[in-house]
Length: 89
Image (cartoon, rainbow, N blue to C red; front, top):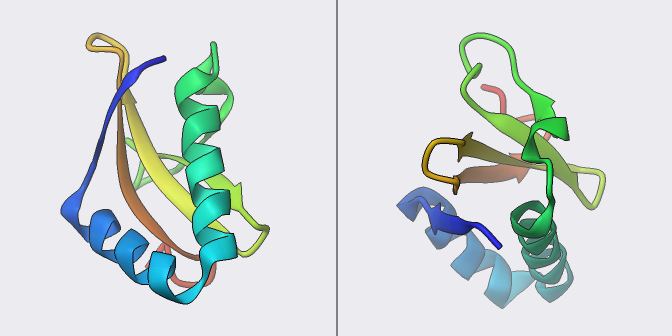
């Protein structure tokens, strides 16, 4: 399993989601676990400019989780989670 960190912005959102929507929270935690245990993180979708350093994965079909994989450090940094209509703005 890889090392990971969660940005403050996402940590606040996860706290709010934990209180309001446990099903979504569990789905996000499951996706994070899946990403961390995946042998090939590069198969997740890479984003285009200006978000080219991020990769994305869908959670419960309507939400998108943004993360970055630093191969040299074998570290995954999770940045943001939002509805797919708003995440790219």
